[in-house]
Structure formats: C-alpha cells, structure tokens
Amino acid sequence: MKKKKIYFPNLNGLRFIAAFLVIIHHIEQFKSIIKVENYWGKIPFINIIGKLGVILFFVLSGFLITYLLLAEEKAFKKISIAKFYMRRVLRIWPLYFLIIILAFFVLPNIEIFILPSYGKDVIYTNLFWKLLLYAIFFPNLVLSLLGVVPYASHTWSIGTEEQYYLVWPVILKHIKKYRILLMFAIILFYLSFKFFLRTSYAYQIPYNNVLRAFWNSFPIDCMAIGALYSILLFQKSKFLKYLVRNDLFYFSIGLVTFLMLKGVYIPYIHYEFYSFFFGVIILNFAVNEKIKISLENKIFNYLGNISYGLYMYHPIGIILAISIISSFDLKTNWILYPLSFILTITMASLSYKYFESFFLQFKDKFSNILSGNRKIE
Image 1 (spheres, rainbow, N blue to C red):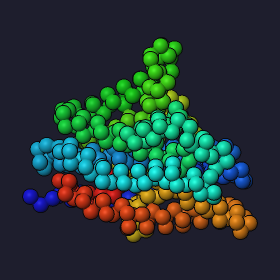
Image 2 (cartoon, rainbow, N blue to C red):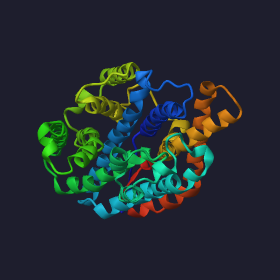
Image 3 (tube, one colour):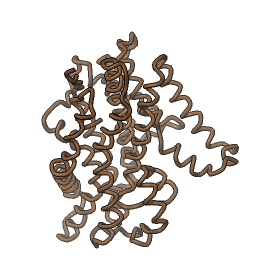
Image 4 (cartoon, rainbow, N blue to C red):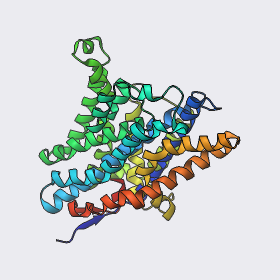
C-alpha cells in the first residue's frame, strides 16, 4: 500500500516562532547570569515568553502527533506503537544525547563556556543522579530537584515530550470511543491533581517533593488541548464551524500577543488558558484557507525544519555570541541578538545536514503515514 502523506501548512512557521520566543527569553537570562546589561526581571514580557514558547511546542505536538496516529488507525485499522517509538527515537535521541555529552563533558572544560556560579563543582554535584535522570529522559526532575546544568537544563521540555510520547499512543490505541471526552477528562484531572499538590494533605505523601516537581513539569493537559483540536478536526466535528473562523483566529492572535507583551499571568490556569488560544491559532493556520496571514514560505519552512536544533543549540550560540562581543568590546544589545541567531542557525543547519539527517533517513521505514511536517513531529 502506498504510504499516505499528510501536510498542514504554516506549522513549520509556528514551530520557528516558538523557538524564537525561547531564544529571546534565554538571551536576557544569560545576560543576567553573566552580569551584563539586561532586561531580565525588568520587562514581564521577557520573563514569560520562554515557557509560553515551550507550551506552544507542546500544543503543536499534541495536535500533529494525534492527527497522524488517528490517520494511521483509520488507514491500517491499528496504531503501531513500536513504529511510533522508533520514529521518536530517530528524531529525538541522537541530538538529545549529543547535547548532554557536550554539557557534562566538553563545555565545562572550555573557558568561554564556564558561567559564573556554574563551574564544574556545581555541575558535578550529584553527578550520578543527574546523568541517570538525563539518560532515562527525566531532565525535568534534574532541573526541579538537583539544579541547573548549563547547556542541558533546557532539555527538560524534551524529557516532558518523551514522557508524553511514551503514553499517548497507548492511550489512543486502547481508548477508541469518547476521545473528546477523554481529552477533557485528562485536562480536568491534571488541573485537579495540580491543585491537590498545593494542599497540606499532599505533604503527607511520601516523596511529595518529587511528585510535585514531576507534575509541574509535565503539562500533559496542554498537549491534550492540542490533541482535542486534532480530534475535532479528524472527526469533522460540528463544533469546527465555531473554531475555524477568521474572527476567532484574529482575536486569538491579538489577545495572545497583547497578554504576552503585557506579561499577563493567569492565576491557576495560566498555561491552559494560553494553550486554548494557541490551539485555535494552530487549527486555523492548518485548515482555514480564508485567513490573510501566512507563514508558508521557504525561510519559515526551513527554520521550522531545523527548529529542534535551534532549540537545543541556542544556549551555546548565545554564550558564544556574548564571548565574541566581549572580546571586541562591542556594544552588547544591538549586535547580541542577530549574532546569537546567526550562530544558532548555523549550528542547527550543520547539525541537521551532517548529523541528524543520518538518523532521519531511516524514519520512513517506521512510518505508515508520512507527514509533510515530519521534521516537527
């Protein structure tokens, strides 16, 4: 049987925008660590866009992964969990482990990459547990419980996605009915348990600190929101007419942009609130042909294709840029941003062409449904 190909326009561009937000956030954060002039903590926008960029990644993943699994189920009457896992391994693991090796064993030995207050003594404290948790894809627990590991701590979100990938195909394979209700149940359960962990009763649970650290860094409800939009689309739900609308699309973009620029934090449901509107934006970008905004061009598609590398390499690019600027005694802000992006894009491009592509060439062997957005699965 010829493999079916699915393509949603604009999603590569959204992937790049998500990475762009994270990079801006970390540029100012690294400037504050190195103690050069910065806006960290001074402009609320800077502080919230990093995590929201990651949340946009999560909603995108929930949307696309779910749609591909549903399409596979429809075409082949089943979901191959083993093939799904192999696709994830080939896409995620090589670069993930390369970054971990660099962060622990290479960069701490290069002077320009040693950050104030984060020398070898800090990195190698609890080294066994850090390496173990990184090896089994729990970097989110390392960050929450054992502290920052420069150039590796941002991989907490990769661990979160891997944990999601572990359970998601199993859930969809074994629960075929009432999937829309299931998504709402997951969202409600996640929020309810998060609230419970803030109560005095939660402190009586053994290892409650570990449980809280994990739950707070595992926003599966945001991925479920992305999946919810995907299921509605796949099932051609009657509710789509209320969601795929120009007015709602433009309102969502305007609202999200305004709230982010103002640094608005929504109590209790901050990421869920933003995820709902991210989902509206993703859905309309994917299927609404009437909208006037397009992210579908060669530049955004390319940057979206290498967005995993942009995310993984950007801390190295930022510190390298700061080092170059310091060496030439240049003004920091006006050149740091473009130089950080140039270095990060260069590293991500070379990595994609000469390292990641070697593994990606085997992905089709484990794909029943081909995605035109395959690089952003």
